[in-house]
Image (tube, rainbow, N blue to C red; front, side, top):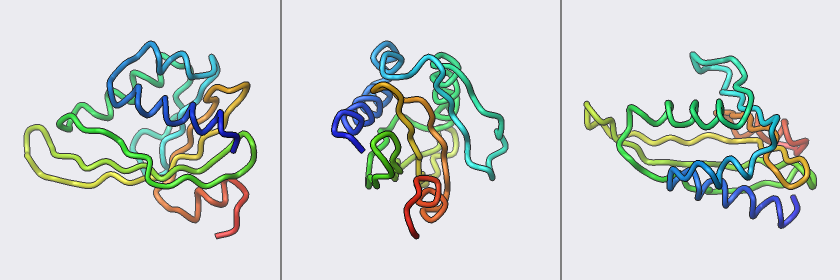
Length: 133
């Protein structure tokens, strides 16, 4: 993955962690898509920067504030990578602690995020970027 795309990915994660919408939207392609993991109840593809932002915020509503961390990055090509993302969470009403860890396969077009597809399993993410398991 190009160094520029790595920086876009880091900036987008930082912007979301700050809940800073304008910079996050600026890093997205107008046709950005968000594809939830296959086992989630929400299986429909989310399309567009605004809809994607709103969906991401809705996912975080049950949890206390916290930051997502980029734990690992695996190159696919110049315009695609797999990123292991982790967040320690605590339920707002229950207080129960949990760990969120998923793989995001991120595709770029012209230096902007075009597609974010989520996987629970590392091997699925590697397959999606064309890497052997």
